[in-house]
Amino acid sequence: MKARKIFFEQQLEAIGQCGMKDGKRSRLAYTKEENMAFVRAWNLMHGAGMRISQDAFGNLYGILGPRGRKVMSGSHLDSVEDAGRFDGVAGVLAAIEAVRMVSESGAKLRRPLMAVAWRGEESVRFGKTYLGSGAAFGKCTEETLERMEVKDFEDEGRKTLRQAMRLCGADPSCLKAHLKPEWIHSYIELHVEQGRVLESEGKRIGIVTSIAGNRRFQLMLAGLGLHTGATRMMDRMGNEGAEGADASFAMAKIILWLREMANGLNTRHRVDALSDVRMACPMIIQNGGGMTTTMQDIAMRFDFRSVDRRLLELAKADFVRDAKEICRSEGISCECQDLAAEDPFELSGEMVDRIGDACTGMGVEARIMPSGAGHDAKVPARFGVKTGMIFVPSKGGISHNPLEDTDMDDLVLGTEVLAETMRRLAEEK
Ligand SMILES: [Zn+2]
Image (tube, rainbow, N blue to C red):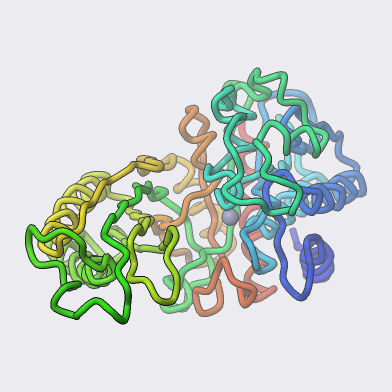
């Protein structure tokens, strides 16, 4: 079975144009830009002769083959702000192409093949991941629907998820699960790696064993805004116990400690370089202040990830303790607020073997590896569906960036591995 390179070249470009504005691509969850990409996916599924359905949350399903438990593949069509072309879209296109390939191969299918395009995988807009896939499995709650978008992305006032869904033609009045785990035979998601492991090892296919979890939280630093000219340096250094310090010093110390601590933890605790803890401070929000006032109130947001839950917990507890100590010594008050917590998740060992068998049959050497990033695949996996993932290399390991790139030949090969695995799963007794 051969995947068509031209299909990927054309469709990555076409879907990549959805959400292009002023040279930047942003296709956020439940926006008209995301809708445009869904129309394209609908057309592709239709063109492949699939039976198409959409659930109340706007997720799109295309089916070929007999009735029965589905062999399913897919990914998401939303993106981060100023995104590349591959994250999510590569997996949706691979699923559509693989379903077409298997059904045209003359394989004797015992069960149907299903391609899915999920809504809202990225947390950028509503601060929550897996909105579409989670909702499809019945995980969307009234509380989730009331989530406010992080900032006003469309200049029309901030919306709740419920409002955004309605504007996209979804029906948030029905929160019932659309998919039951027992209806699904297996789920495989192809995704770009978004890191440099495959590239650095010269491998073209990765088979994912587990998906990292996260701990997201913010530290609220409260110092005192002081006149930048009138206040002597000795009066803004924030000696221990002193009131009224410039919060920027504590902030800087915390950031530097973050790197040192991550390196220390990883040297002491990691099993290998792929199970390490990844600690970042991707956002710092300053409230108030100005050019002539020292920093007073700062919210520092942290995102810690690891496939090792124990290491994740340890990193967060130790880091918050140390950050509070730094603040105390700087005369700054510090409070911690939790934002999100997801435990790491092991994918199905059987699926790792099945994808591995397909690779062996095709003479492809694969790298068995964990995923540092989160993916929709985690949702069906949590609901007990046999779930696997295929990675294809990201050039330079760059992702969540317009420079995101994957060699088309690698994407074609990944799709052929996906199709071969789906064929075997759909044919077997
Ligand atoms: Zn993704």
